[in-house]
Length: 319
Image (cartoon, rainbow, N blue to C red):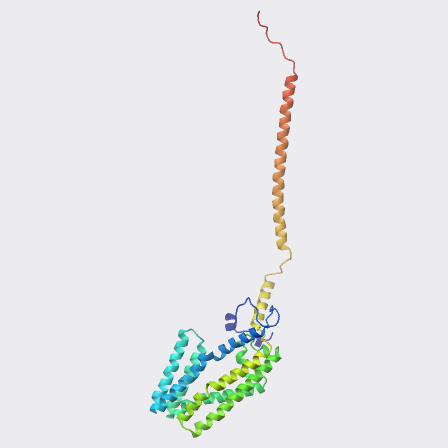
């Protein structure tokens, strides 16, 4: 097993039920069922992308900004309103003890957009950081796919507990990650091709409503395509379960080889000791019975000998 296949400490601490082997793990009985593999894929998507709540937290602050700016044309109020709403959503996640990375990423993105807009005095610059991020992410998806290390595999590998094992041990899964990464790259690149012309030649209101309209639908399309590719791919290899099994084997070897029949020998020794005690008690009882019988015989012989002795005549009574 290479170093890239080893799990992180967070994965080992947050692993699933250790008593139940996952797909591809040592000790798993047969291939994983399609339903089980779909459940694992769904859980991984919710963990990686934040689910429906993550989409709302990504879209609503921008919607509040464009609504406020459309109504009052006040850049400062609109930026502060979007930032406060994003902060409240983050606090709600913290209170619910949800994943913090989605909460802080939303606040960070809105905060950077608000700073850009307030420092430049241009409302449309509120969307510029997000647009640059989308373009950079599209390029990263395409470049890593061409390089044979698809970005989506780097993102979802730890979530599926397979880390980077798909690169060398699961070629079918590597192909699925590559196809899905190409899908994300082209969809995000198309989104950038639509929004950047509006940024340069349109106004802030048009750009804001366009960003809201292009927020969730492309994301859902990418998630759906990823789902299709991964569900048809081979199941992930659970390298964390492999590491746990290897550690257990090493612990057993360090404890010393266990001799077969040691337990049986101990049980036999105990049975022999118990048998010896029982035999000793039986011998004592037999000796006691023998002594009792011998004593009875001696008493009987002594009585017979006494009866056999001649009796002396006693004194005669006077007449």
